[in-house]
Amino acid sequence: MRSTTRPTTAKCTLPQYMGFLISEPKSSTCTRLAEVTGISHDSVNRFLQRENYQPKDMFDEAAQNLCLVGGTLSVDDTVLDKPYSNSVALVSHFWSGKHHRAVKGINLVTLYYTDPAGRHMPVNFRICDKSEGKTKNDYFLEMLSEVLAWGLKPAYVTGDSWYSCVKNLKTIKNHQTGFMFAVEKNRTVSLEKGHWQQVQALEVPDDGLDVWLKDFGKVRLFRTMLKDQRRHYVVYLPEDVPVQRDDFILIHDQHWQIEQFHRAIKQVCHIEHFQVRNERPVRNHIFSSILSFVYLQKMQIAQEFTNIYQHQRKLFKEVVGAFIKIFAKDKDDLLPKFAGAINA
Image (tube, one colour):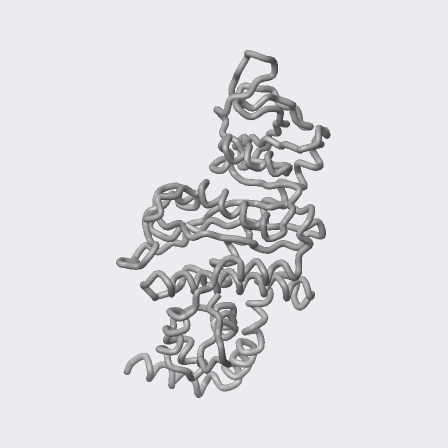
């Protein structure tokens, strides 16, 4: 983060920009922020161009409300759709699970942590930059190393099949940490030495099946059904303790929090809605959106509302209600005015 040697005179600040992102219902542009606050849109542009926020800044904010020991750390990525953006930094073509094809956008890889008390927030992130020549797995291992160095001690690391390569699994194992990862149906395992077969060919009981994962070692295999589609997961514990189905379901449910996070930052925090082009402003906007979600989670922990979508609905409840009353009372006078405005 940019350090200052004297009190700032900036007219646009991070709290202002975050408050705008979580309160503006539609247009989250610099000109709209200038319109509602009275500052110039150049001040907003200068804020996005000036700052240099880093993932560690977000981790420090989130860590204040989390127990850093014994939770579940999840990794996943999402594409921020920018189909009409040309000459915007970091925009490229990435595979989208939402669209089931490669789309134009920005690829965001996130580590999301759920602590033993059920509180959950993002703790690290990366924006994929193809010029760096790194894969999403490279970013994941970098982020994992960082959060462990920052003091996070998860009991489990979870992810989908994209992140379940042997290198990732062995790295997690070397950190003496358990994991739960989805695996593709053709992943090779063994029930007895020398006899390998794909997981889709196995009969997997509800309470799981102990197998040897090729090039890794002993894991417990579980199978679930989602939308008439079979999915397979491998679970590993550093201690040789049997993993029960209830444990698997709990870890699986905690991993689902990262999917809800991706939905929320798009629907509530305007992470996709920006009209800046250069790399620094794009990065600062994305950071501000993610940090806005962190603060919404803090407000939810403080029981100011039950969920972040309720917060957004309540912001305009009184305004909409007041307008309805005025319209219902004075509709005979208002309708000719509306008609005149339309004809004009």
